[in-house]
Image 1: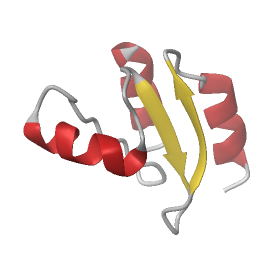
Image 2 (image 1 turned 90 degrees about the horizontal axis):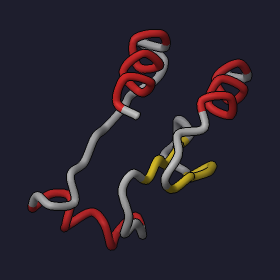
Image 3 (image 1 turned 90 degrees about the vertical axis):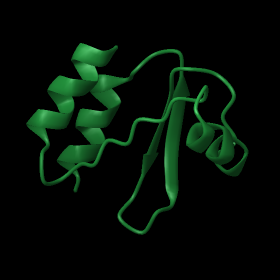
Amino acid sequence: MKPVVDRVEQEFEGRLVVIRLNIQEELGQELAPVYGFEYTPTFIFFDEQGNELWRTVGDFDEARLRAEMSTR
């Protein structure tokens, strides 16, 4: 997944912020219950106001991300 996420992050630089958390590290453990994720990888897409729009677990939905970004 990392190469795909890296490519999308570069493509949408300035329009999309990718935050990577490791749930084995302290910060990831603190934020997991806040955002309700238990499994990796979990991808959560937020709008500009911080509202969760959608999430996917186990697979990165590049087509859906591209569709969302085309409307923003």
